[in-house]
Length: 101
Image 1 (cartoon, rainbow, N blue to C red):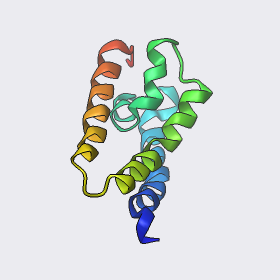
Image 2 (tube, rainbow, N blue to C red; image 1 turned 90 degrees about the vertical axis):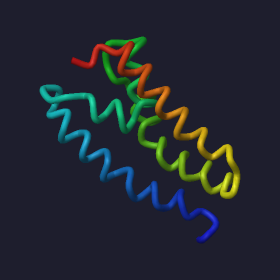
Image 3 (cartoon, one colour; image 1 turned 60 degrees about the vertical axis):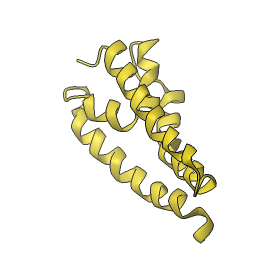
């Protein structure tokens, strides 16, 4: 179990984060900013379409467990910081190009 430590942690954190962003979205009457910040890969699809579609919801569901898996593979490697950089770039592009209001 020690081998996939971050994968397991992020798998348990994901439902908590999803509950938080669903609460913040308020059935479409709230704000989408926390969703864009926490799940940018799931929200990047709204750049091309005007709604959140099923493939991007699935991508958002698996985003953090995939982060954990990559972190487990790159334990003592300087390339593990690329996950954070990629996440931040995706957040910025989603905030710029998505009509989230």
